Image 1: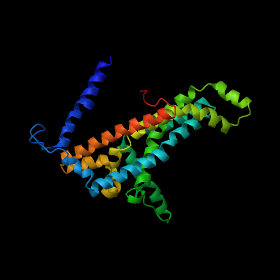
Image 2: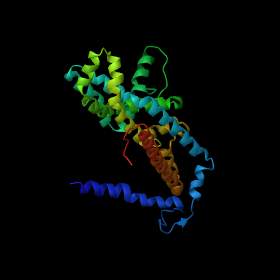
Image 3: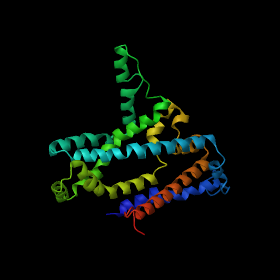
Image 4: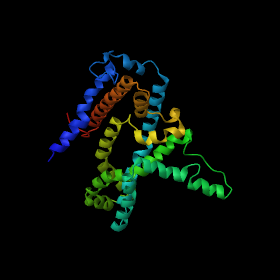
Length: 287
């Protein structure tokens, strides 16, 4: 039963890794990979020569990653804690369903929804304009781009991410809360000494996975909105690889950047996993 999944994984994830060889060649599509000239590490010079486009993409990527780890990542934890505190199971299921729904929408729909609400001709601005009030610019404003995409990620994925935390909270022994209550612990003390320690392993695990994916911050979401705000404000490493490799046909340089991005991701996962072991957690694996 697992064989079809294994075949698909090999065919579409592992076999294409052989194509990374073009990062070491002057790849020309009409010549082919085998006949393209070897150039060694020449394509990687873009990483050290200070190419403005690459440095801009790297800076935007790191900034977006920082915002999403510090501000976006904790929100599903807070949602899970809030849902877990609800007494009524009917209300809890209703709220869960509402929060999960946006996860199943494509980024095209999500971006369109935000444009309809926050765009220059969106519902909110039209309401302000009809009442003679000043409008505001969010969609299409380069200065508001990072807060905008962060809000989109929160709306789309935070509800779905609460599933993991709710699953962990459901396994916490109720007797621990009863014992803490008998000892005079308030709700906040119970949260700090019972609930959060139960969540710590899954939080560390997800942070490790997040660090491994730190240099990938949403290709489709950002590419859809790039024309409105410009490349300077929205270019990240994934869109840089697309624009430089596919659009500008610098195939080998784009492959070099993508290869380095993957290697850095592996190093971050390995380092974060070692750090988790240092603090007594299992992390992704035990060596």
